[in-house]
Image (cartoon, rainbow, N blue to C red):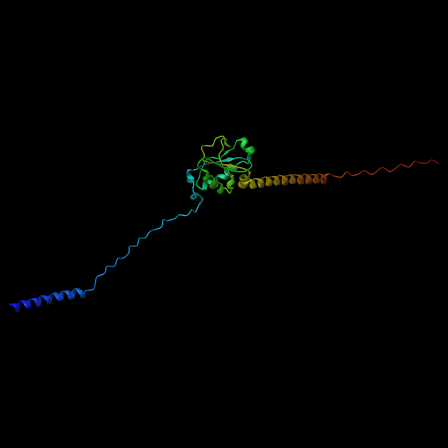
Amino acid sequence: MSVGRGAILIAVAFVIGLILLQKTDRAPSTTVKTPTVTVTTSPNLTLPTTPTTLGGHTPSSVKVLVVNGTNTAGAASRVVPPLTQAGYNVLAPTDATKTAKSSTRQSVVYFTPGYDLDAKIIATRLTLQLTAVEALPATAPVANTQEANVLVLVGPDLAGASGGTTATTGRTTATTARTTATTARTTATTAHTSTTRLSVTPTTAKPAKPATTPTTHP
């Protein structure tokens, strides 16, 4: 029995040795963690491309009244097209009061509260300096502002740029035409006078009677 137990103990020791040997031969396992990368996207930036995107209100929501502050007929109407093409709500143009016309020396772009930036954009479109932009005074230069947000008072500078040269040219052409007509009438009168002179038949002078020699009696 002692021999059998010894053999069993040897066998058990052998199995335990094999198990321990297998555990020591295995390579230690390693865990590799991959870092998490967070990608952030930048917001899209939209750069302004036209004056209307620089701020202010949408042109279609801005009421603009163009007022003629000069004695040049149609000066306000000639300023309307560029503003209409830009999309502004342009009201029917009108004349300034007599007081405003007598004191207007240059164009002014007036604005009501909250529309100062819109007035600056409109001044730029009309090739005016930003110094021409002012707040609408208590006494407006027009009898009825028609609840306009921006009021453009047309002075001699815009009136001349809009059509003053054409008007001057027209007046010069008319004067030249009148001068030509006067010259033509003068030429016709001169020709008529010359013709009258040529048509006069010269009068033939009658020969003088010979003088009678008195007879001398011997």
